[in-house]
Every structure is written in structure tokens, then in C-alpha cells.
Image (cartoon, rainbow, N blue to C red; front, top):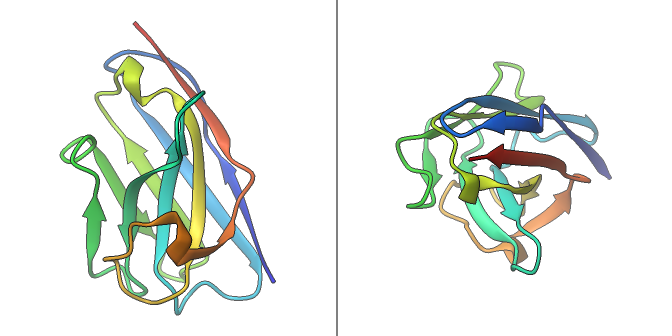
Length: 125
């Protein structure tokens, strides 16, 4: 069982930046794609970004493309989400998750088997 712990959330003004981290412990994540999802109150959980097992391929939701960047460290134990030019509509609880496979093309929450507890991101206007 892998444990995923997100950190880095907080309150930021529109136009600001935050960097989320997802630290893994227990079982490895190095052979798996990883993803970030978010869920706003009353909304379904939605895909934000994914990165393949070696960091060589990424994918993004259209709503964050060009503003957010997903990456993973060399040891592949931590995954990051750099969020720039934040907008009030980015406000949500952000979750990291381990994919069931190694590619970055998975975007459905059902394709991810392990989840963190989430970190709140609030963007004020």
C-alpha cells in the first residue's frame, strides 16, 4: 500500500502562484504514472494533470494548460504541481493519485488506484 501526502496548498490572490507537493511512502511510485485532480464544492472530481512513469510525458486539462506544470523528482518519490496565474475558478481541494499504469494518457479518476487526502487551494479575486 502506498501512502500519498499532499502539501503546499493555501490562500493566494488571483494571479499568484502555489507549488503543491505529493510525497509517497510505503510502496513505490517510480514505475507508475501520477496525476493531480481537484474537486470544488458540489462538483465532481476532475482531472488536472498527469505525468508518466519517467517524467518524459505529461498531459493537462485544457483549463490549466499553459499555467500549471506537473513534474516529479529524480528519485521519483515526489510529484509536484506548479500553479501559476491562478484564478478564482482554480479554488478546490487538490488530490494526487497513483495511476494503475505507467503512461500519462490516463485522465479518468477510475484509472487511479491510490489517493492522497487532499490539500485546499483557495484563490481570492
